[in-house]
Length: 509
Image (cartoon, rainbow, N blue to C red; front, side):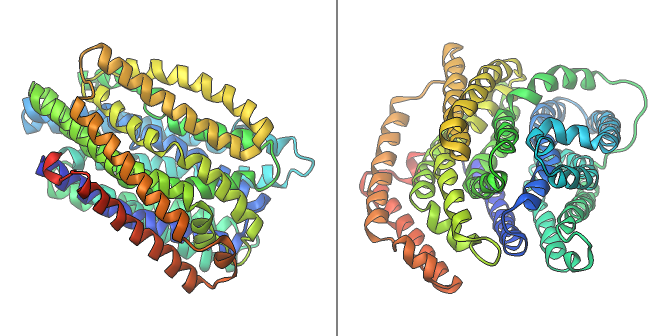
């Protein structure tokens, strides 16, 4: 068992868990104070646009193109050259972000029209105008969080995983405090959420600085050109599309959802937020560590450890991803009711959110696999393959979106995204196998079927022993929490006991 990999992944997972739990607390306050309506739809669109681009310029494509370059320099170059690379790439990133942020703030209504055209064609332009105003406040978050992610990539390369993983906590705290206190002093209360995003971005960036100074890798402005920036550009453009295909698909969901009934954007948002909890704990944690470790092994030409790291990451993904998938599907409505159905968030909204959560939940394993498999290509400096796969999946997803949305509304959008993720994962694996980079071993497949059997046993328990929906609807927050915690805790125990009886031990990893 790779103790270094497990330790690093565990650190990221723990910090990410703290962040995601606070994220759910944040969403609880948003649901309680603002409910599900056109105003929340407007905020979520204004927040999702910079948040989506963050996945590209921040911890998504940029980081995954940048980390292998930095890891290679760290392995083969002296510290002066490493700092030089950080300075030049950081300067170029800052310039690009300032230009993009300035342009978007000027043409905010046009951006809202592109990403949420349904708002513009609505008889009442309140949502459109509000979303445009809030985008001017939220969009600078892109600049702040991208620089934060740049700093986090440097820290990850130096095996400082805890700080970048903890940083999102500050955004959640900022938005919670803004929703509770700042909203009382604004003419349009929901604008407080937009200001909370901006303040959170500032706090996240400032938080990273002491840790960069500690490892003596604080970025500085640099003039002129550097060969590393050329390599980054070559890898970044396809990576912008290829690595973040799942995020692009989710954004397409939002675009189409603005054409549906009011509340559709919010229903998808709340269900996606619950999807992101296990996705972050498993997929993002594994992918973050895998990229750094794989890049290091590839730079050292250590093929054995390279293959071992892939195999290990995928096994961990299955052990935790498959039962999480089952749990999301079977416990969708109790989870939504327990977490969000208070105040302005009613039972109808809980039911609609739960339906899309079930659809998203079916694709959880695929979402996780995509993140891990994409890291394999990126660690080798190959960004072309993910973009080719991404182009195919993008077309398929858009096609499925319009078909499924026509018949199943917002649920169809979530289902199309999950189906596209399975296609994405399969195509990435197909290319790895064709190039003799990685193939599932017989041992891996045997483990998968044992995991599947243990998950089925857990699912049977949930179906037979969970409280019915009426109980959750009528119970108070305390009893809801006890019920859902009890069923989840017992299910976890049953799952891991089943794994042990089926012969899966930690040493088998």
